[in-house]
Image (cartoon, rainbow, N blue to C red; front, top):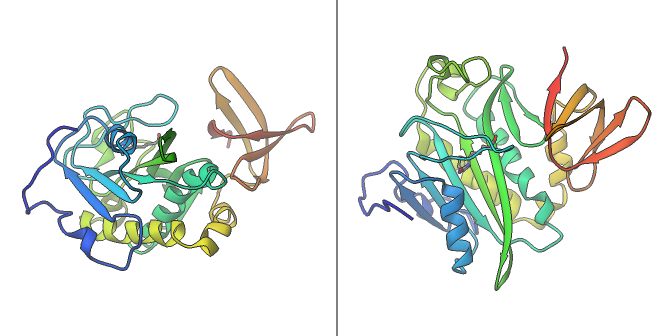
Length: 263
Ligand code: BTN
């Protein structure tokens, strides 16, 4: 891990000691600059770091998105972080849902614009993407781990970047004023912990998450590699897999893919 800072002046300093969180954010490492916080957390996971570690960076030079895409964000503008969790095997497939639901609940508190989820992991506002997550899992000597990597657009202005100008937004764009990354991060860690640390909330996670999915009930295309399946998104199963009924009436259970709508 590069550039770990000892300064006490960065924006996220001291967040681990506020609020009543039991797991998520138990330890927080801030990096001024790194390649990818997912890689940094994975490295700590392999070194048997206990769950709850958060690594947050002001800048990623090799930030990764889903479907082999890159994730870029100007320095110090947005929230880029990864969380280490060590769930039981039964809960492992549900890990990607935690980020989306926690981000949506958090953003509700910072904007009047309705926040929705697009299967599987996008958080959307005003028909644009405001957050995404990349969840990677593995196993070390002590069992399974999951790295929940999340990017939330807080203060960036996507309109200046042609490749995302039409598809991305940020809290500042929605609200017209800058938003404190620390305030959003504080709430977000609390929301993640509130889901993960509560067996009751984990039990209702799929239902709570799917209630916000704008994808359900739509005619969509789902692309995975070179394959595209067209159909009606009928719902999700008990671990969040999409149930897609194709034109022949066959129901596909999809774990991943890129959804597009032809409206
Ligand atoms: C997506 O929507 O494609 C997922 C984007 C995930 C981006 C976050 S930013 C923090 C963490 N580190 C990474 O390299 N990626 C995730």
